[in-house]
Amino acid sequence: MRIFAIGDPHLSFAVQKPMDIFGEQWADHPVKIESNWIRVISRDDWILIPGDISWALHLEEAKPDLQFLANLPGKKILIRGNHDYWWSTVSKVRRLLPDSMYALQNDSIQIGDIAVCGTRGWNCPGSYDFSEHDQQIYEREVGRLKLSLDQADKRAKERWVMLHYPPTNEKHEPSGFIEVMQKYDVSVCVYGHLHGEGHRNALQGEHFGIRFYLTACDYLNFQPVRLL
Image (cartoon, rainbow, N blue to C red; front, side):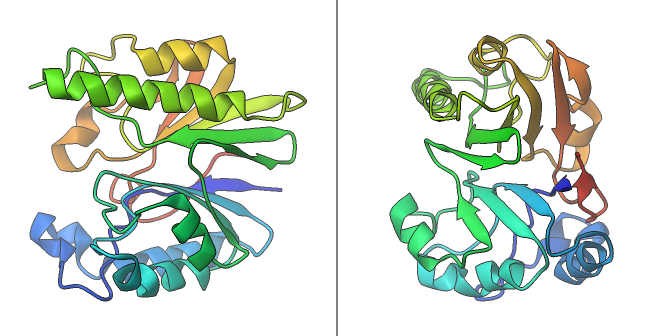
């Protein structure tokens, strides 16, 4: 069994949202994702996709983007990103997804001895322009992460977390997300959201007793990274 991750595919087959306005590296990026994916991932592998899946505004518009991912090898676990406006309710999303794809929200999924949990996350206190409004969403998302970890099978040997947002501020100070992950002995955390200059300050490697991976697809040069 192998587990990979790649986040922030920002697909837009049904809407006009060219990504190369954010840099030449994004030109024809679905082609890059597909070719790299097929080269390294097999049918029995698992792929974590931590958000910003589609630019669609409605679920109907997201269907071609989800189908693109469904056609690729492996079993996929999705969480919602800040740009996934099409993700209305998890029940509607799950009804649309094929058996090879699972939408994670306020629960967990077991891969062998690993319980995969997660939530979208949010900006952390101490972040640039963090506001009172951010505080409310941040506290709610910390609670959702705890709820997801509470749902994990107690027999799991490891707990992994998927977030869309990084779990700390730019100074990598402890946060509620870090505290919850430490409490539940989380060993791996994957996240996305950061692009361009944001890559320079990514939380990578082992910190707080947890292994962190930035998996935004432009950071990975559009190739899934192997975690296990």
